Length: 334
Ligand code: SF4
Ligand code: SF4
Image (tube, rainbow, N blue to C red):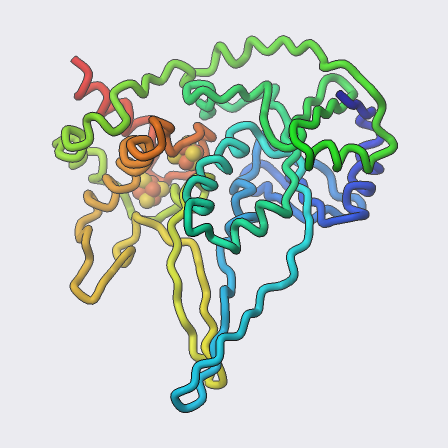
């Protein structure tokens, strides 16, 4: 265990950023984002960022590859920037767990090499939560916000930052920082987690076993009735992983882009034969069935949600996974 007085945080960030790109959560509550560190940039006072650090492994938009077409010849132009190591400081426990969920999708055979390269080059330094929001429910999903995972786990207690390496990558990172001293993990009294309003959410009605029961539930009609199909819930969600791929003809070459997509959109997975989910009810149901039923059914019961609470904060009609689970769970549990 290492420690550092918070008065030396700027020097610590400068040392981290000397060898590689460093991202820290910065900005005001509501718009805070993981931002490349530069001198003077401070940690956000907000509990968490508006969007998670998912962007750093799975960017919202990326140019995958280009093609040049000459007559009947197609030349593939590999345009990836050389991989560079980077550090993300201040990832919360919920968002750190989301990487495990994304890994099971993007690193499954055949691995997504764009994502894989970034995962291999990224070092994650987490930060324990001490003041969660009322919308947080990571504890109900088995995540301990006071003991986050990551390559390095971090705690702030009073005026000191404590750091514990968990992986070889994490140890190698801490060894490059001579300003760190040896320390003991602080005793953290955090009864606030026991008072979170959503801490006792019951997920026992979900998973793969009652798939058709949930799929055919008449409750979807009222749950989905007001959904605007805006996609906000999917874009802030650290575990959503759907994307679209489009080619653009610039006149001299074809540029192939990948960009995030949302199962809430009417053109999601649109095919020449039509839209497989033509109503908003079907699209709404898909999002929640994926997180509560389909994903756990193929991943040993693990839910596709980490309880970060972002969708509770951002949905313009105040609809979210907690309300869906509460309504469906009530119906299915006598
Ligand atoms: S579904 Fe909502 S609470 Fe769960 S991980 Fe996604 S944004 Fe967070
Ligand atoms: S944020 Fe709310 S209104 Fe928008 S798509 Fe999601 S559930 Fe529907």
